[in-house]
Amino acid sequence: MGDNVDRVLEQWLAERPDLDASPMGVIGRVQRASRRLERGLSENFALHGLQLWEFDILGTLRRSGPPYRLTAGALSASAMVTSGAITNRIDRLVAKGLVTRETDPANRRSVAITLTESGWQVIEDVLAHHVAEEERLLAALSADERRQLAALLRTLLVGLGDVPSAPVPETAQESR
Amino acid sequence: MGDNVDRVLEQWLAERPDLDASPMGVIGRVQRASRRLERGLSENFALHGLQLWEFDILGTLRRSGPPYRLTAGALSASAMVTSGAITNRIDRLVAKGLVTRETDPANRRSVAITLTESGWQVIEDVLAHHVAEEERLLAALSADERRQLAALLRTLLVGLGDVPSAPVPETAQESR
DNA sequence: CTTAAAGTCTTCAATGTTGAACATTTCAAT
DNA sequence: ATTGAAATGTTCAACATTGAAGACTTTAAG
Image: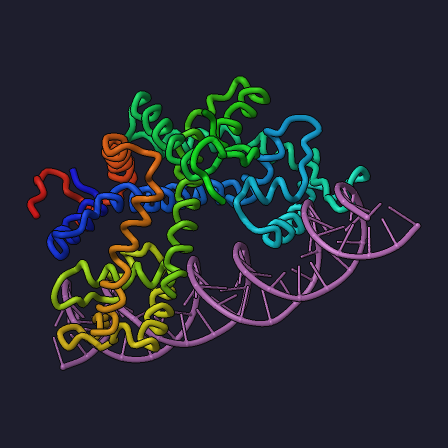
């Protein structure tokens, strides 16, 4: 059973047989899968009147535990968007009453974003639906395959430096 | 060793132990990996004065084989962006002299986009560098792990419907 | 033929992101 | 204390994408 990326690899093989295009078999699929999954998730959120990024931020606050509060910088890093984008998103969440924005008294450069009661409700209401939709999108994979896929992607991500804080990979011949 | 998604899953487990958040372990990683990879590729293309989407379109034309010509619709589907976005992109590639745009005489609704000599040069110049960069980004994975990862993602993508054309191959065995 | 429907692309307003500049605030080294 | 650098957010212009509407062409049906 071939997918679109198989077709791409066939084409490269025909046109440039000297080239080992196999890395595209991994990277191309990661990108296409990401886009497909994102589309599926977005459609599901739309049914609940929510945007993907809204769920992302509310969920990040929710899972951070009491007091359900993070800095703008932490949200920016978690969502992998620039600080300017986070400012914009928070503006809109504040306008909808889902979070509050206050300057941190301990560090007045920093801004503390806190989930409101209303924001809590929203995330609690959609969380189960969201996970069910993710489940549905992964239906083609068995439980074991999902574990394998997650493990391989973890290895890849660690190699790409997608690790929690502590940027100290000086164990080897790293030269910055 | 844990990545950022491991942290996310730990948080959900602590806050919502009733919830099976494991699907996030797959989907979250696909999305983060996609973003990281895209960033890496973009930085590399920038060194060659190229944008990721430019390479994408030129590469799609190049690998399609002689006469290196596709319709706008085909490019739109391949890049997974709307037709409006493709019109815009082609405008800019035409302005740079990398492709030509002509209405197809056989079907005058359609527009034929053809790689120019200059466009050919650009893609040939960066192709090897691009694959080398992809290789580098995948360095954390062994050859065998890459094969496994590609296979699992293929299964996922087929399940998501990311297959070449033929929308209803019900009873017939596709021959192509 | 004529007409309606579908296909293909372009246009454009709305929207959201980036990247850079800027304003504060904190920290570190005198 | 003072000064310079780093940290943290906000602002804003440039730019790209989407989604819907429109223009034109082809196909299908009567």
